[in-house]
Amino acid sequence: MRLKGKLAVITAGASGMGKAAALLFAREGAAVAIVDINGAAAIQVANEIGAAGGTAYAIHADLSNAQECRGSINEAARSLGGIDIFWAHAGIPGTDVVEDVDLAEYELSMAVNVRSCYLTVGEAVKHIRKRGGGSVILAASIAGLVGSLLSPLYSAGKFAVVGLGKSLSLRYGPEQIRINVICPGLTATPMLREFMGRGSSDEQAVETQKKFMTMIPLARLAQPEDIAKTALFLASDDSAYITGVAIPVDGGFTAK
Ligand SMILES: NC(=O)c1ccc[n+]([C@@H]2O[C@H](COP(=O)([O-])OP(=O)(O)OC[C@H]3O[C@@H](n4cnc5c(N)ncnc54)[C@H](O)[C@@H]3O)[C@@H](O)[C@H]2O)c1
Image (cartoon, rainbow, N blue to C red; front, side, top):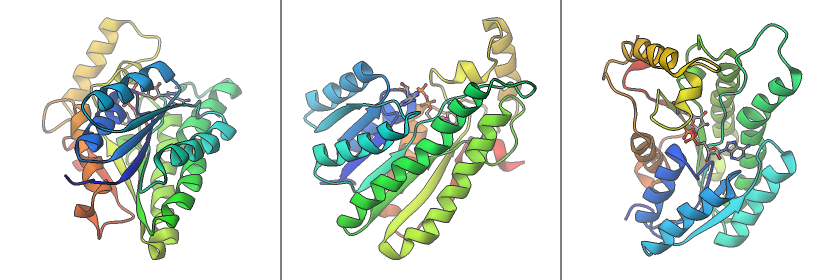
């Protein structure tokens, strides 16, 4: 077991890659707190972990809300008895409008994709420090490494997350808190449909996805488990000397 006795918090852990990581971390011996706006789905994941003999807590929070960002991490730490591992994984595609963008839509995208990351990590490190160090993972995207044709504002937010991760690794390295970033490529989760065209028909979205598939050297979508396994590596001592990196898990999309 690679995370035996560890205490892990995953935001947006009720679906997709976050859920896959919650299940995997628990199988590897961690107690897990799942923070998500979808409270019912978070409870289901926690129940699944419990039924398999693990320990998990579901915490309902809307991470577009600053107070809930802070409150949910502290609640998670109280439930678990501390934090060793924190994966700030919440993100939304958000608006793709540039001209005459609705300011509320702009703010929502930045609140979930950037501010929630900043605030939740700011709380999590206080708890990780008390345990003598640990691992923080941030969820960016290939859109945080190269420009995105479909999602300029999302890309701006994810570039910010990559910069945040590198900067925080400098600040917290001396306290043995490692901070790394995962940059997933196109991943088969419910969110993918929205990336493939907000407001477009399903047929158009399929065509767009086909175009993107030609840009992936490994010629397949990522599965949530591909990303969860990378998170496990970064969470565990297998990556003990790695901090401040942004790892693409993208089938080679950004290699060109
Ligand atoms: N799917 C992809 O192709 C892809 C690619 C690169 C990066 N990502 C990033 O991965 C992360 C998760 O994506 P996924 O594909 O696993 O998504 P998903 O759609 O499977 O799950 C997203 C989860 O986030 C939760 N959520 C949404 N808004 C929230 C909020 N305000 N507060 C708390 N929870 C909230 C949802 O309830 C859901 O459980 C995001 O940061 C996303 O930007 C996704």
